Length: 302
Image 1 (cartoon, helix red, strand yellow):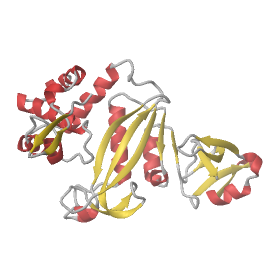
Image 2 (spheres, one colour):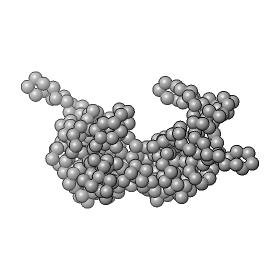
Image 3 (spheres, rainbow, N blue to C red):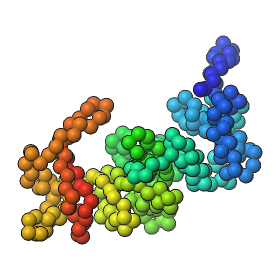
Image 4 (tube, rainbow, N blue to C red):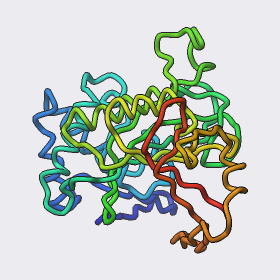
């Protein structure tokens, strides 16, 4: 619950969204669970102000608007907490995941699906870390913006964010591709998956889109970790299928789909905003790289 208060200043109403002291008791109880992650009281206060700002109704979640829309929050102190105060974001996120897994309603289940994806957001200017001209999924085209790689937990009932990492575009780094900070998205993806494995949370399957499914090196790394995966691949991707008499044939997915009869496909209704029917066929012996795999590959024909 957010408390709003109106203030008349020279006949103009200025709306203040939140005041930290008026936040519900559950907010303070939740924030207290992170208190051992901070070194001093100002950090604890800064954390509460920042989280309260993120939960506010402001369209833009920048520090200036968070401070302006909250009673008792000073911009300079909030900026110091984010930009200069020494704290470890990974440690805070680790604590968040521990808290999630301690609650019976959000506790992780065995065999969950781990969703790996990247998300782009349009951004003007060039002062933000990682900003550059790249494909922005939010608008479906190349533009100036930032991209983050994320992992999510899904067990059929609930979806929870796990980890996030900023993708540093080459034009945002002084050394370009040779810069020590540059990492490709698939490499970042493997790093995020390893974080879940190191925590002891092993997914039943990893879900990826074609941006990762077309990367042979990435798929091999998943197999090295003995992870099952399901992902998209380009229609011109060459695969190896086994025909009768154990004869292996290399063929593109498009050619394989055309060679199948309509009876080989099953209709599946996608529960989206506008329900859509796709036709799916499943193979259990298919190779996307040179060596044999037994992972599932789904072909769709709309």
